[in-house]
Image (cartoon, rainbow, N blue to C red; front, side, top):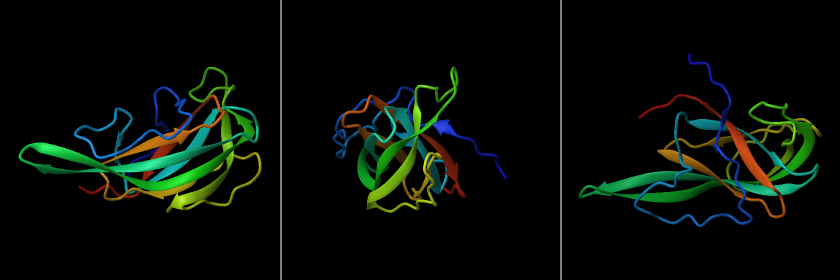
Length: 159
């Protein structure tokens, strides 16, 4: 059994004030992440104030190849409405003391499991991405400063 640990989805947190357009294309977006499991556990966070909200979409990417050309097609797996709590990371760590974890998530589109959530405790979501070659988090921050998501691949990976 392989030990899993949290990974940052984006090297630099997103600052999008609206979801970026995702349509079929010949190349993957630079923010697409290779699928490493059947499901993901997500732990969103960002720079904002307590009770600030933003939206997070998980996009699944798959391709069809013909004549040496690949057409990458996106699918919205789920969309989550996220509300920042008051729990921060730690100074000089991957999630810093100026970033707040999300403590409330609501599924607004697609499928995800939202374990029991408690006020001012980091909330997680479990998302099924089986069948997608890659996945990508996208954000609509509204008035927020930035957001990102920690993820942990889980389940068996099969090719």
